[in-house]
Length: 280
Image (cartoon, rainbow, N blue to C red):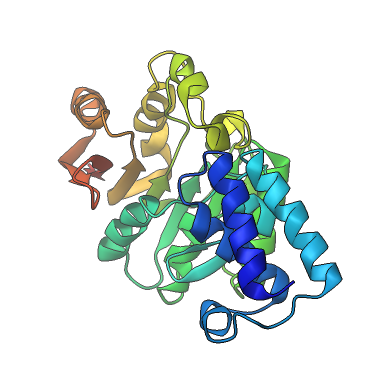
């Protein structure tokens, strides 16, 4: 079978399964299997696909038909111009989260210390380190498997000497130096909403990293209340939020009385995505 026939067959199978971006997913999986790129597939549609490649491609398509995300099948995802390894132990880095990183980079200066809570794959903290000089990050997560993924990404990106990883429930339990920047994409989906999410999310992404309790705000309350112990005066806090949580999280910060210059930042779709504030 050649490239074109494989792509057409894979696309048809994904369309029948109700995959929205069937052609794109089929192409990405074929490019990975054949160790090639879109230009090669486009320029040489008649190139023969080996039996081994065809078999692996069919296995990948079968996994995608079951709604397993492409990123988990391939084991990696692009984010902020970098490639991050991902497994089902971490959330898949999303483009919307780049808003959080970009906003933090506006305020992050060289040699600053960054605290990344609920780090997952490490994509937020490590991206900040990658695009700054002599910064350091302490990244926490309650999942040992997630931290293993994050550590692997720090090594792959050549940032392991500037990143520390701590297994803990949100904040580090040991005494640490204070930080100039706090970033977090905590679990924020209401418990009763999770079952209504797409199968790719509810059936594959880690529930631990999704469930924000009954009202979706439990982690914001904890972060807003306890962050001061770890921050310098004048430090900035950046929290990713759900599209309908901007006012709630802003109000939590106002009531805490510890923050000023509180602002809700929108994503490229016009939805609330990040809350930024300065700690007194």
